[in-house]
Image (cartoon, rainbow, N blue to C red; front, side):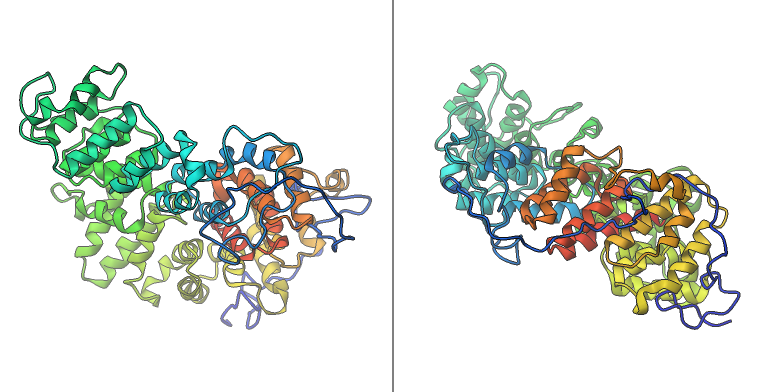
Amino acid sequence: MAVPDVESGAGRGLDDPLASPWPSSPGPSAAPLPLLPSGRTPSFEVVPTVAPPSAIAVETLGPLDPDGAGPLAGAAGLGGDPWRGIPRAEVLALLPELPTLTPSPAVKELQRRLLLSRGSPAAAPGEPEPARRFGALRVEKLAAMGDPRGAADLAALLPEAMTADEAAARALTDAELLAGPLDCAAATERAKPFAGPYWQRVELFCRLRAGRIGGGASMEGGSGPAGDDIAFDMLREQPGGDPDFLRVAEAMAGGPAVRLRSLKDPSPLTLAALRTLQAGLPPDVLSLTDPARLAAVASNNGTDPATRVTAAERAATALFLDSRRLAEAYRAAPAKGDELLRLKDAVARDRTARTRALVQQAMLAAIAGGRRVELAGLALELLDPPMLAGPVGAVVADMLDTLSPTPDAAALAPAAAQLCFALGRPDKGKRWHDLALRSRPTAEVARLWPLAVIALGPPPGGGALGLAGWLDESLRGADPEARARVAGQLALLQAMGLAIPEEAWRRISDPEEIASMPADARPPTADPALWQRLAEASADRRVGETALAALLLLGNAGPAGTPPAVVARVVGALRAVGLDSDARAVAREAAAALAG
């Protein structure tokens, strides 16, 4: 049998499941993809049609927002004038709604560049000054999404906005405290326009960390330099303060060591102070849902390793911890007894962070090639779809880098290719994909074809033969859920520019239902206002507004958790305004999840 070539369709034998010709009649019907517009004749276009520019229109605008500075300009950001065409009031209303807890690196990177790009929306004539300024809202959102460095770089360019917005100043300071170490000189300067207990506690923390207070404090009013320090006295007397922080501050000043039995809602200051002391945190900190605070728990080496690894993985899944620090937490989780020898049983019953940590540790100790392949397979098996494109998946991909894509590792090839493509590592993904094609030309490999096309680019000749073979294999015995998944993959492929014949759509859809759908039908899960905004902004090439609407439609679920019909429209819109790399990254993450 000839070796199958999924990209070109060449070299296929008759018994190759990817080479089957089109059937003479459509397969069983299923519910149509709700994205597809239609009129009298069904249309299957998912990429927005961008009309050529019309005659230039003169529009009177008010003065530009003075908060348009940004560290990124031109191609590094979103172009020279990203906010053209959208009123400032609308931008200010939408910015706070941007996602902060997405597991999607593609979403997070696009959002980061949007917020850091130079440029600002114009105010309408006579528009009053807003309660909160554009620059301050950008800083606050960057801090909330776990990018304190980007937030600080932006804040340094917007001193006027920061002096008038205490909420943004606090958000940035909290983010720096959690990520560590806090730049106390910058925090002190930032605090000058403000007063109150929060800033007094920040000042006290900085003084304690610098060693300017010490000598045996007693928070109940005992003697010693800390007990006599006016800062302690003032903070003790203030109602509704931060008693956990004050207990830790006393220990930093030389008082009794901190022994915490419970810490259910620690402040960023408390966590930063505990990390400075390397004081252990109790297990109930895992009740936290804020990934920024979980990342601070994970970076405290005094914390119990079991608590630390769980906090680290949760923070990493939400992209608040990178793969290097996650790997460190994995290595610190202790094994008990012969656990490393019974990992297959553990994986079958326990898909927790600790099990993933034990697999990593076993891999570090393994020498025999067969054992290493087995462990890599277990690591791949433990990956849930939201983990593929982020740091958890990256740790497993680093494990795969220690193996060669040779026939003895063929069983890993489909999952390894899926992971590498999801992470945006096309060269490594292609090596594993080629091994899968040589070794396992089955339905398991067929499912990867759309992902490979999106990750590597359209195959020569448009990929019609590969499309036919993939559809044959994917639709064989497919239930409605599987057909819906195939519809989503077709939509993503078309959004990325691959020509999809109408016959392909008819094989997965009921033509009568398609013909009865209104033009530009919207999935019921998509917000109608955002759906319309995305269509109009991309048609008019308004880059910032298109990115803003795309990010809001994807939300915290990201491409892997958003209906494929919505993702496909987002991908098409991003491509229409020139954000091709962002579009490919979004499509790649969605296709990796759909690959199963």
